[in-house]
Length: 464
Ligand code: PHE
Image (cartoon, rainbow, N blue to C red; front, side):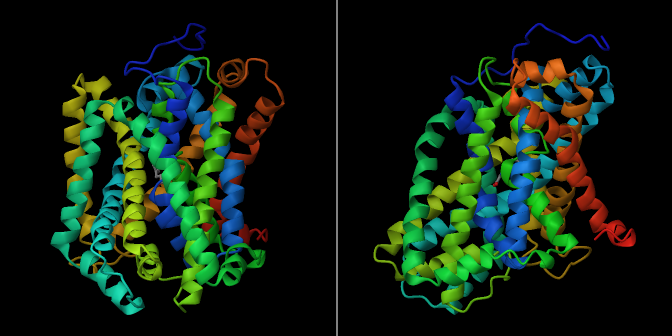
């Protein structure tokens, strides 16, 4: 089979999206999630804003976007789960079947990420009820902190919300991702955007908007440390859901006639707008209340309730906000499981139901390590901190960029020009050529440089 490049189109083993729009919604649902609203503001805060934000934008458009195009193209060409697709295209394109390990690394990354993602999504779900019961009305920063500590400090409560969220995720994945997901994303994503705009209005009026703009966008390029650059790169992959096969799995269900390039650009653009908006909502509140932008993972839970406590109708706005955030996390969680579930179904001839519940069980159990990281295990620190911190760092900042680099390298160097242009643009026009340049040179080299920088080699060679 080696070097026998197929011209015959394959069909997906798990059904197809009903339209291009359905695919856009599913990938947007995957991309927009806790990464945008919870993670981006807190890591931007921890890493000093400015240079970090600009480098993040660089990574999103020049590294993340070409990886996304590569990943969806590979997925649609292989039309299997990411492990089988990498093995199949690997041998077909004259490389090797061993490319399957990139797929497996992705499946593993998805499992590890979901284990802590679900815990944070559980916080968002818990806050629906906190906001709804009006506990934040007139609350000051200390009262808001106490609410967050009561939730994350209790192993039982934390684990319960994690359990609930994992249950919700498995139910959808067990039923097949096409069903239901589509309709829900279509309504709830625009609603999330609208609500962020309302909150932006509040932050512009009641917050310190000028300080927030300064913090987020003043270049201060000299301040970008190697560690911050790695975190920005990792987050670019995380927020776009690339580097672990999620969009590859979704690409496998994309009908042949749709444009991958345009779709990816639209999704990357939307994802970036939502993240920047979240930052522009949160930092004015941080600076107006004299809070520390670097307080870490609790940032949105310790700032937004201050706004909900002051806004007229804040209980309603707050409840709606956390409903939409939980929903956004849910559609991302589904995509984190899909590569693993598709792989289990195809490799072990399991039913979708059995595959989803078994994988879900494993992720749920693993999630306890993260659910307990803010309470009973909070003193158990090694390497980057708690279990939660380590899982996050290992997956987001190491596995995703390396997985993404391998995928974009595969598309740029191993796959033939004919195969990729066949998926992306049969006429091989300027945007195809731009993609190929980014995929072959810019993205892999940029990822490599960031890693060399982290291990100190750029310094040693006098380059940084
Ligand atoms: N992109 C999602 C978010 O921003 C997280 C995610 C990462 C989903 C990797 C799938 C794959 O919340």
